[in-house]
Length: 160
Image (tube, rainbow, N blue to C red):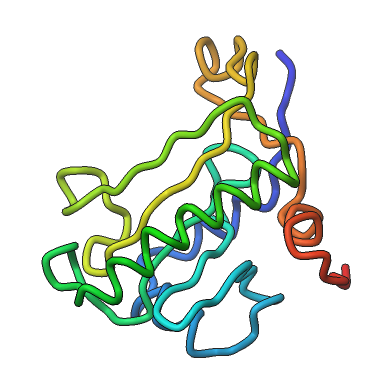
């Protein structure tokens, strides 16, 4: 049997349920490189998912802690959709994917990992990015490290 090593996943497995809200906490820190926040606007921000479904997987969220779209003010909702558009444009320019999965999971039963802070997932897709690994082994291979992806999207110098 062959082994697939993914030691960075150990942190995810051992962390348990974090206290607080990842979106509120990361945005307030103002440490965008460390937290892999790619874009900030007046009402929202986009950040790399630390446990991505695919390379370049971004999450777009409002700064305000709101559970669903009904709780957003018009300005925030407009800002959220505009940042989704702008983030997709950035991913198109830098990664050249063939398509995207764009989605919002509202509530735990819908699959929301963070159910009390609305956010949009942007997952770049390439023709042929699904192979035998997810189908037969239940394993997804992400070919690029998060720091390298952050640098590619922002042009930032990331220290290893």
